[in-house]
Length: 252
Ligand SMILES: C[S@@+](CC[C@H](N)C(=O)[O-])C[C@H]1O[C@@H](n2cnc3c(N)ncnc32)[C@H](O)[C@@H]1O
Image 1 (cartoon, protein in one colour):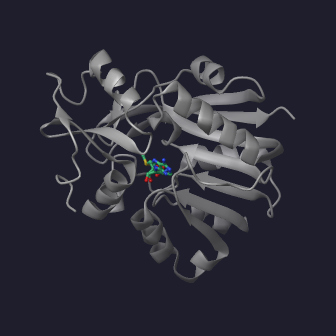
Image 2 (tube, protein in one colour):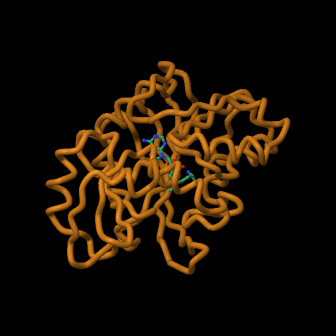
């Protein structure tokens, strides 16, 4: 099945990808199962399976050309280093894609790393890049909204540019419940999302943009916000995207 065949239904708001897309999009989105997304491509907004979208994205461009590409996830790495985790701490990078975070965590000496992503292609790119070191990592292909994760297991859950795709309240609650269940007592959550001044879409998909206060309110009780910082990311195509990074800790 090609990209266009995956399009189930089309509706076209006048302004395209960067106009905020209006309330109509939200109404439509609420009717979709969460395994579907609305994506803005040349001819307007289309619905397709999330998995198909992400496999297409990683299959059609080199990872260095993708909008969120950074050769090194500097802000995430700094925040993680500041946690002072033991080298055997359990770390999960949710929606880790083809990012080099796992390479740098391995180089730093961490030995219990899981990378989860909906795209098999993205994880295979990381595995190829790492060569024999890939065997030190647990790779999980699956949808974070549905996948079973071990309870109370992870000392750190990292997410850069993944949570912000969840624009529905139910999806956000489901993510928070999974996060709280999978985190060990007093476990850490390091998250990077688009900040309010960033564009309204990422990878052609609508995103929820957050201030620290909005993210704290969305995640609710049981997660304490300990730090936040903003970082400007410039995509390989020259688009400026302000990210918000936060460090939360489970309160018990
Ligand atoms: C914008 S990219 C960010 C990738 C990586 N975190 C980085 O910073 O380079 C979003 C990633 O989330 C993955 N993703 C999107 N929805 C997902 C889901 N429901 N479950 C698991 N992974 C998902 C995509 O395949 C993609 O790799």
